[in-house]
Length: 198
Image (tube, rainbow, N blue to C red):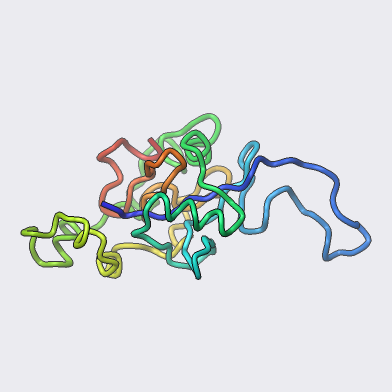
């Protein structure tokens, strides 16, 4: 079942001298690009990724893209001169320091993230039956995520943010990490494999 998007990270952060300080357009405000957040020694996308022309991008209000394999996610990140997070990096970005269970803290808030799909199962709701739908073809139909109350635009859930300012690491869509697994749960299942960031 492929319900996922790519959480992407830049190379290790190396803080060095800025560019020509006499030209305001070349002043470096920090080590990460504007659409990324610095978390310890790496940069991570602020929002869940969407894919445009084979390139992973992220932006507030954009609908993240699902139904990509881990291999595709890695290629989309590379096309953006980035890479997938390692599992350790992703967990650190989600849990913060000291580590918390959810990106926003240790107490579950049912209104913070997109993790409470009101239907039955989105595949069954989309096809109207569970008979013959539990296969790759049916479960990867993009129409499933186009139903009401499924995927939210990135950053829409203002409380679903980590201490470092990364949105939607819990719920909304699963996110691939470099070890070819996905993390964070999705809008209809954010507890089966462990609560919150776990």
